[in-house]
Length: 155
Image (tube, rainbow, N blue to C red):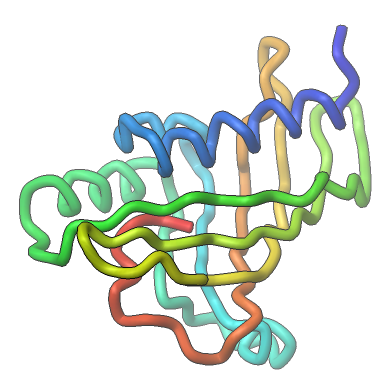
């Protein structure tokens, strides 16, 4: 059986690939049914403020977000390219682990520029089921206190 570092590394790679290269519908499948997902700023996280720019407390809400992306929202076409650091395993148990992973997200717009969109870290709780790491809780902590209004795709 793979160790938890390898399971989380594999899960991270698959997670960003679903956002960057699609299909985006696969993104929600990286979470448990009762997952929690939040995008916030480093300052808000440090201060313990609960609100997030994106906030979902179950997998169904994540699937709804993807449906809205595809069917309801109107936004300038763009894509992301994630660059991830190695996950730091903070705690490990028989059923899962907590980890922290640095990220950098590049945004690519149609004929426009390629620019740095976001940097920060994932604060994660994983459960391991059937040899696969699934996200139980992900707090995306963005380094900047300014989050672009074009945060359409998940980070």
